[in-house]
Length: 165
Ligand SMILES: [Fe+2]
Ligand SMILES: [Fe+2]
Image (cartoon, rainbow, N blue to C red; front, side, top):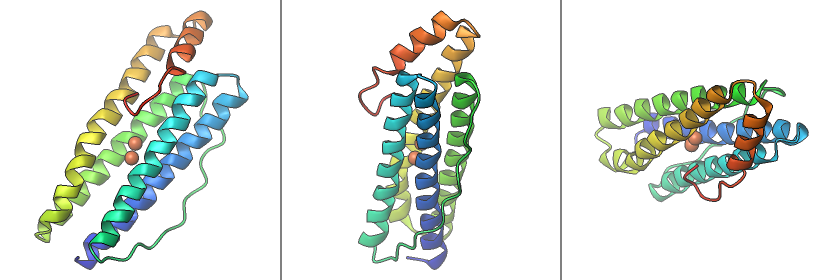
């Protein structure tokens, strides 16, 4: 594997783990404010990010590359109202998508078809990630500041049981 591709894959592993850390921080804040459903949703999201990191971790190893873990920045303590938190999540996913696309292009520059093939899964996954976060933003925006609507959505989000939001 080209050193630049390996370095970019290691950067992506950090970004996935960092995403999980941000979602875990959101879950913690939601827990502290008795939004159990949103907290549950964010915990599952955090687990997914760890799975994404491990998928890349395994891939680098299978290619005979070297995984080098990096520092993960401290996440914010507060994210504001539920709508603000999910807006942050959507922006975060858009940044992850851009990073995956850059990585895909870099692999192409080095003729690394195997890495592009591995990244196909992530390209598709990011469409779903943005769709899920975008839908959450739309629903919360519609609820505006109505406590009953927010409570209803909290219950709804608490029913998330799989990776499909
Ligand atoms: Fe991810
Ligand atoms: Fe994600």
